[in-house]
Length: 441
Image (cartoon, rainbow, N blue to C red; front, side, top):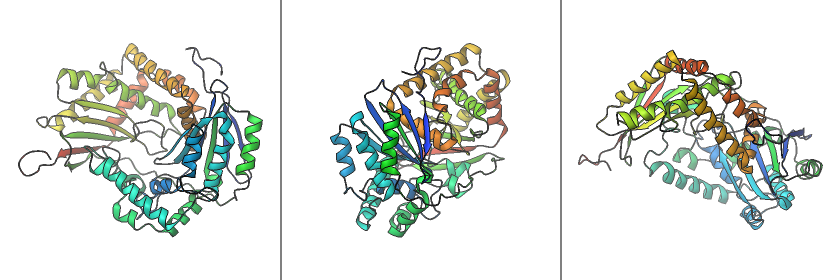
């Protein structure tokens, strides 16, 4: 058990780091309080890195990494993890792709062998490529094209707020571009981005540091070193004006609205970024939040409203530039500009007066409870450690966040509200499409 915080909850256990000669960075987080181990590989490539003309390729390649490897036939990874009583998955984000599993502690070496085998040589075949293109297309149909508010706001808002291809394009992918993907594309993507030096291996749970280090060296040490790609900057100027776009949605029962703002760079201004995280909660987190109380329970002009950092709904999940969003669903009789004006009025009040001390303390306590709960689950702890080590070089942020958030002052939240009002923004309006009879489809 790690040392206790002043709230009586365990912090993240001690961290151990080393780097293999091939460049693979390794992070160990032993914790004897749980009888399982969790293993992840975070690769420094996400959909912002995929080549123009190949939208959705980073996500497609994540699927290909589950189709067998040098020593494991297709579906063997699934059988070995599930046969050990474990669970596994992977996900693609703006700036990284992760692969992970949680298993009984006795199965640690099995997990390391499987992750090393596919990092060394995934089974890239024409059959696997064509099959996974179809799988991804079906995923897009289910999650975006056939679902009310599909892609709202993470696909639809970026092209309004951003100008460059990396920041603005659809990371899920365009059907025609996915269909044009070739094995040469896949091989080049693997060679370019899946070098050991472009990844972080994280292991958490019931482990011996010395024994685990030896196992990592055994299984990952002979993966050949390859050049690590230069990490590009995706920075672009702040929008100087308000940008607006409307899109139809054939499945949406009600109109929806998304406001997008640029966030401070968390790598250089973490406290400013965290102030925006608390600002989002002051506005919409809980029945007593300002926009909830005013727009849902008071004026009754929205049925749902939320605000926060990150297009995926989680803070600190991307490098700069990142996005602060406010999203709302409202009746068709309500003008979206009325909702926007209410958001502006509340931001202006907060910029002038800041939140009350008790109001902010309540929000900070809620965040602390949520973060501690996240740390209690070995999978959540593993993924937070690996992502923050890769993105910011400091996995310790996972343990520091409750205290850093608790230290944010009303004046910093007021400054965050003023910052949103001081720059341009994007406004996305989702309009239910009509079937020609005046009814939504």
